[in-house]
Image (cartoon, rainbow, N blue to C red; front, side, top):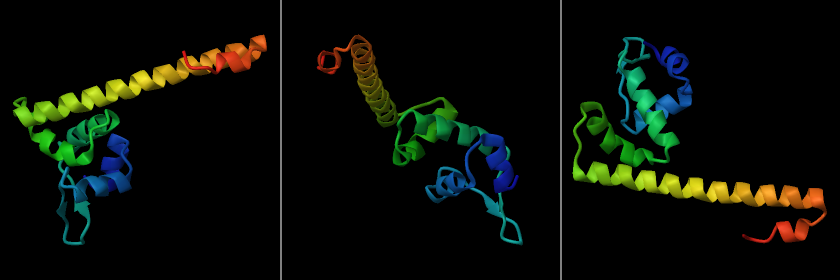
Length: 122
């Protein structure tokens, strides 16, 4: 499948797909006309890449993780990277929830005309 088809199938932009290829996360072969052609199983790989990126895993780590994720076997290093990504994402979520809670207090303070007190940290 060509890069535009892969983009339409996966929802990843053509620019992102080119970046993934540049980072050697996916690979293509070239036609005689120089167009990129991807195997059908690349759609699953792109889905995993996007999932890991959404989870906060840097692309430099994804390249090392993908073989383990696809095979179902892992190394201690890969497991450590996934665990670190999980901890980082959990910390970010806690921070976002705290920010949401502060915003709720501010909104309540504005409604009750006690905005300055509501903005104070909990």
